[in-house]
Image (cartoon, rainbow, N blue to C red; front, top):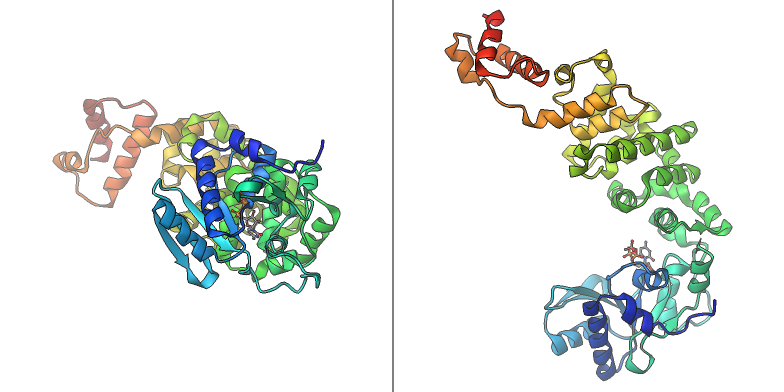
Length: 416
Ligand code: CTP
């Protein structure tokens, strides 16, 4: 295929009309403000890949803040200035928001890796980015609207499906880029080139210097729309899990667990009211190493902590796997979340999968046949036993043994 030099037609064809007309507006402002303005980052890459993306990131060879103010003067909305970064966000009246940065302002301090050769300000900005496929820009000024700027051969790496860093210190400067690389690999079915992969392996130990929060943010993105089992496996190859104490020899086991979790989830519509949380995948390698406590550093919410507790407790309960009636599971499982149960029944082939899932489905609407008030009226003394009785009643109801209040009252006799 010939190199593409101008993407105006592709922009028109692929971008939603409102996004395109926004770029048109920006173009007009660039003209009278007299500064070079570029569309940059993921959206450029995704135009080549024909994947939807509406995130407009703008780089200006000049002051990003001044340009955002120009946009506001021309079209309204409001501007929020991020003084520390020298960037601004323009909130358009239509609720779209657009980030505007100055090519001069630096992401990081001038990287040690930056070559001595003079780069234009735009090229210098591109050089600071993560991968060649993300380091392309499209001119937005009117006469050259849609012209591609691709100094690092991003277009050619897109064709060969390659994730490639721009320089050797890229992962040292920012180890989260290794996780980004894996995310792009799995999302697009790309691979890092040899050099990039070996840099990733060499920098992996730096992952431990990051805050749990930063890793969690990347994990959320990784496990949201990519392929979790593949992601887990690839992170083993790159020694990610091992940095945090997971064993090396459980990668296949972990892969299988994650795949099974997806399968059970897909098979039973009940689970589909909630997405599987990133954390449930994240815990798998630690769980199989017998060290789920190591995932605690990354459990930043109450829900995450409950999940860890639940899977530990589930593993310790004895004998419940052999339980037979739908209701009987209630005795063991009533306090566990759906998530934890899904995780647990996916860890290996589970004979009772269907019946457990049918329990999980039914437990959310057990008809309240008797209340505590009813028990008091029947002459029982309020106390701890009430909880037990009402739970046993739920068991019997789930098992289909009790359907009416009369039957329940008769059943209650044995507690008197
Ligand atoms: N970027 C970078 N290093 C990072 C994060 C981001 O160089 N650690 C640059 C990349 O050029 C990227 C751009 O900032 O294209 C925007 O980042 P982000 O929105 O996170 O990524 P996208 O590439 O847009 O990915 P996605 O499609 O997942 O939003």
